[in-house]
Length: 312
Ligand SMILES: Nc1nc(=O)c2c([nH]1)NC[C@@H]1CN(c3ccc(C(=O)N[C@@H](CCC(=O)O)C(=O)O)cc3)C=[N+]21
Image 1 (spheres, rainbow, N blue to C red):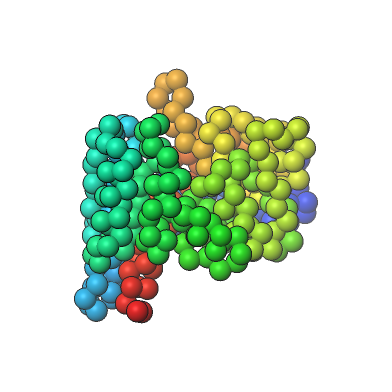
Image 2: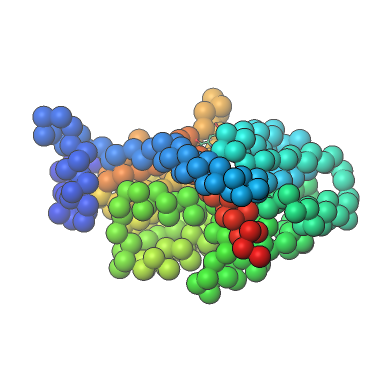
C-alpha cells in the first residue's frame, strides 16, 4: 500500500504523522515503530526510585516467582523477570519445582508464600503441567499478592471498574497508548484474541478509557471487516501473521502481543510486520514492543503491593 493511501486527515493522527515524516518533508510511507523497550526502561527507573523510598521506610518489595518444570521459554522469562527486579532494587525469589510435583504440594508452596510478609507479589509461571488445574492454583494466591492480576477477584474488580492489580500485558499496552498520546475516548478499539490473561482484560481497560470495544475470537466471521474499523488494534492470538496490512485502517495504532518463534528461530508477532507497517500510523515490534512492558508492569504491581502493605 502506498503512502497516499494513508492521508493524515483520515487517520486522526495528523500531528503525529507529521512527526514521522522523513527529513526533507517527505512521508516515508511507513508507520512509526513504537519503542516498548525504551518506555519500559523509563518505567523501571521510576520503580527503582519508588523502591528506594520504600527501602528508606524499611520495606524492600519482594516478588516470588514459582516455576514448575523446565519449559525452556519459561526459564528465559523467569530469568528476565528476576534480573529486572534486582536492577530496580526489588527482592526476587525464584522457586523451581519439579515437573511432577503434585498439585497439592504446589498449593502448599503458594499458601506458604501467602503467609510470608517479605513476599508482596506472587507469580506462578504459566503454562503449568497438564496434571494441574491452573485456575485452582491461581485462586489459591492471595488476591492482594496476585501481581499478575489473574485471580477471579482481581478479574471481577477490573470488570466492575475498581481494579487492584491490572494484568501486566494489557496494563503495559495502556501505558504505550498513553505515551503515544493515542486518544481513546470514542475511539474504535478492536482486540483480537479473548484470553483471560490478555484479550478480556485488555477489552475492559480500553472500555474504561472510553473506547468502543470489539472483542474478536477464533470464531469471528471475516476478521478483516472487524479489524479494518480499528483506530487501535490489539492482536493477541498466538497465530503468526493472522493480521496483515490489508486488514488495517490507514493510520491505526497497531499493538502486537504475539511472541512466536518462526522456522529459523526468529521471534515474530501475530501481525505481519512488513505489510502492516505500510498502513499503520504506529506499530509495536516483536521483540522490543509489548514484551518488555509486561515485565515493567509486573515490577509496578509488585512495588504497589509493597506500598499498600505499609498502609495497614
Ligand atoms: N504467570 C505468568 N505471568 C506472565 O506474565 C507470563 C507467564 N505466566 N507465562 C509466560 C508469559 C510470557 N511473558 C513474557 C514477558 C516478557 C517477554 C519479553 O520481554 N519479551 C522480549 C523478548 C524476549 C526474548 O528475546 O525471548 C520482547 O518481546 O522484546 C516475553 C514474554 C510473560 N508471561
